[in-house]
Image (cartoon, rainbow, N blue to C red):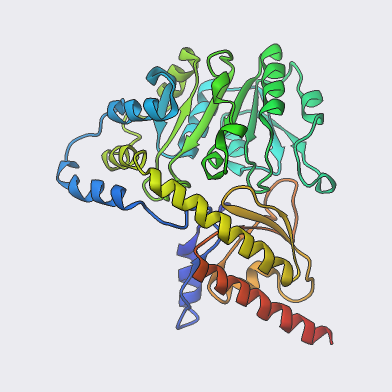
Length: 366
């Protein structure tokens, strides 16, 4: 089975293990907080393990209450799920749109969910010549034949941002045409000023807006699986809830979420680390002949300009380093990659491996 996402350390262990003495795997392919699971979350789960013999609260009442305070929105605007992907699929099944639009490139699960719901998918292509920015042409591309529009801000894998002002105009255009805007803000919390790029404050005014967020990336809870969506559209939220099973959020996930929301110092430490390591990686990548296209969240979108030899992801794989090969994104091809920002000692190893590859290619060309 071909897996379409990053983070597949299991296949890497299997393949490299057959070569004997496999190196320690460094996963730069999944955009997870480099600080790892917060200590408070670890304690909360460990101290509650004896309660896991009972069913979790299907309404996630304590978690919803904590999220309501954290996001400053009414609790009845919130729904939790088994990670962001769960809510993407449940929304597609609930709405059953006839035709929807996604960016190209963007996160693959939007299209996967829409196709599973029997929807016709249109792509709004992003241009390399424009730095893969989402421009005014998107407004013109929206028409009455569309039922849904999926956007991701910052976009995955490009990392490019859409301004609040632009998103507001998109939202207004969608509202006038009867289009549901599904906005993925899962990487928003990694930004220096998240509120500058969020349109959460438009939820009350626009019932055609649903915003997706998750604990997966920002709190390094990928293995726990916890996401949530926000909308003032009570009917839509009810339909999304009905499109999934009642115990989609486990008891450990609910406890982890409540605990994570208290980790204010953890978030500040995350931003400080990303600020420093982003600068180090961009400098190192450029010195090894890599074109850096964008870096606004906790990942860097690049193009390999070296040419010759093995593709970059294959060369690094042999050293136990995983990066996200983006050639299976609609609208991209060979040579585009996404690299997450990790701790300094890991980032050093990546740059050293790239420098070694650059020297090898230079020797071959000489």
